Image (cartoon, rainbow over all chains, first blue to last red; front, side, top):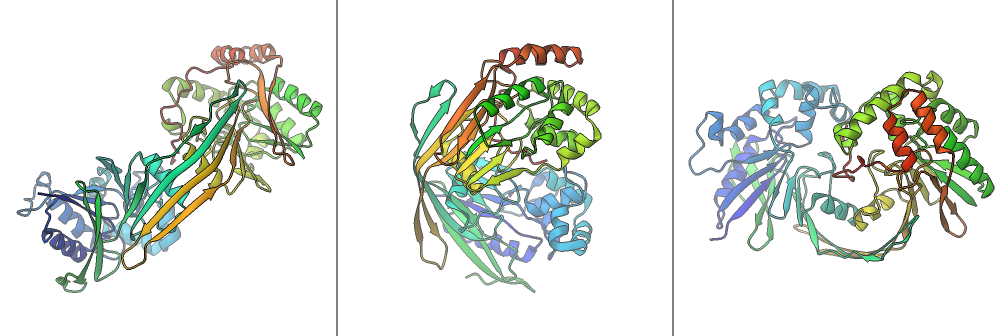
Length: 253
Length: 270
């Protein structure tokens, strides 16, 4: 039986959206065996503590029993988590200047008040990204959690990120978009001259590789997007899930 | 116009003086400097004062930054523990002897300089700490030049001079998004170049001679220059000033065994 990975990003405190996506995942004809959340678990608009409790409830190590038939999500940190670390003195940069620049003092105050110290410590123990098979799953890229790759990112920059990632597929969530960009670095001739003379010409073509934007679960009220990946056939599927953002999830499109 | 590009002087006044005389003899019309004026060597103030007196456009190097900001390099800035330990000793010594006005000048240095389609940086356009080694993946190297929006990228930091031609670049891209037509594009990238200026004051190409480059903006011709100088005098000054003798040892040989980075393309996030 073919199995799939579900790859999510950008829950941003939106528990209803997350539950709707979980329900959609459970409905898949090919079972989902791995669940990855590539950052931005928290945000400014939702109930951050409720989402963190829910993520932790999947894991028996939290003390709570996982729901029957559920898998343990593998969570890595995103832009919003890094802002929490900065506010709580867990990173080299203090006082979250990026957050302040984008959302002002109200944003800083809200994030500070909506994520407990204990939750920040739990988030701090999450990974920076996951290397699985020939894939890297990460919030931004190996350059930075803030690196926003989109379909409009120059091809050479996508190529650079893939080479840095040492991966054939780079799944990322920073943009919140769903997309698949195949990059084929087919030809480059490189010649180096040093004080000792000209070295041999090197031709550097590479196999095609891709960057996949995995969407955003919670950023757009009522509409969640996420990604399914089938490692057996290398196929990526994008799913959109509609839900009632006030009363909870329900309708799946 | 004939340009001379120098880098990584590292407080070596003797080497700088000799290189400037060679530049004069080569009739270069303009000098650019890629930073690291201080650190390791015995005469950081004299080097900065000479660069300033000649109004040489200069980028800020990682050593210059550390003297301004305080030692803030994470462990990734040093390729080995040995290199890190030596680096800290050199930083501390330099930090103690540097004149306030020299520190102020270093703080004013830009990360990047431009002249038409030429870009000048210390390490890479992304970081003063990134090593653009000649063995770096070609497409990664190409991205550095393109991200600087330049035809020619001048860098230093590795202390070994080279010219790298990247040509006939071809990159295909196919974008699929739900609800939109698939888009396919082919990107052709004509010749781009990376020119590493080597090091005036702490060469690591296996000989003690100072290195720099000449570049003709009209013909695009590059010349890697290797200039003998009285390195024995600098070595003697290193010892006399109380700097670690290992700095004199490696200066006399033009090598640094400890400078072997596991991940030279890593970009420090601090």
